[in-house]
Image (cartoon, rainbow, N blue to C red; front, side, top):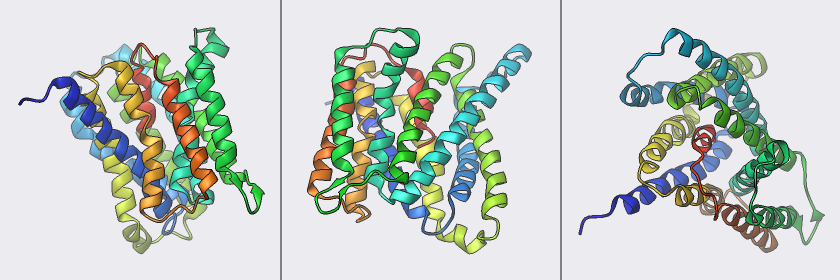
Length: 308
């Protein structure tokens, strides 16, 4: 029996969510060998190289002069914010050393986006978003609470929460620029900005720690984040969203935070107490619930996720 286009699209989207979720495991592991700026810089160099074939296949038409200027402006603004977001997130990941915590806290941007649109632009926000936000806040408290030592919301968790606000701003900027700029060029360009800034910061702040051996040791992390998480999962999402229901696509892609927690448990990275897993469930449930009534596809989410 031939599989329907909708079912096959959902499977492809789930695969993208799994890849993005397990990327948090790779990012935690990479910190054992290289510094945050090295991971960011090299990862995005690999990503822009890996994304070139995708750009060639889907965007063969060259940019016109007026379009080139608009694209350059958008790429510079979005790329700077993306670099800031991924840097803050990576330092948060380094401190927490937890794929599950990193994925779940970072994933809160899914709730923050509709809330931000309501606060700044008075766009209607469904009750499910506010309910999901309450669940997520309670879940975050439980995730940071240890029955033995009490509440622990340290610098790492704070940085991850700040990064989720940055992802929110990034999504909103993408949503603004994608109306006048082609998405693939915007995505590739913001990757290029991150690659350049990451490499510069790598030599300034981590040059004395850098070695060929350290890069070799971190090769699987760099390959996963650069090729699979960015270029690979992005391509899967482009293909999957062609025939998927927008609401279903948003829900499926939001499950990446759960896969981050699963990956952390499977690879023995996370050591979360039972009450923390209750918090994880509440955060994930809040994210999932907040997505249930989304009526339109937000293409900017696609571009924002490429950095995780």
